[in-house]
Image (cartoon, rainbow, N blue to C red):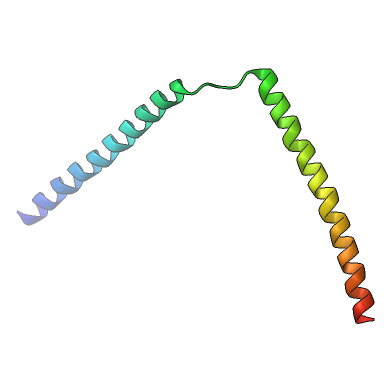
Length: 77
């Protein structure tokens, strides 16, 4: 008798988890409908700005690394 009760309890808990998951996706979908998405022109400009910043930072860090490695070589030699 105890095994039957625990099995039905697990089934109800599983259905609860599935229900919670379904509710989460329904609410997430509702929230996504409220989002103001950027226009195509806006996201292109933003993407270009990010790419430009990545290139600039890559160059800066490469130069800084090169300079610091030369300084360390001078100190150790």
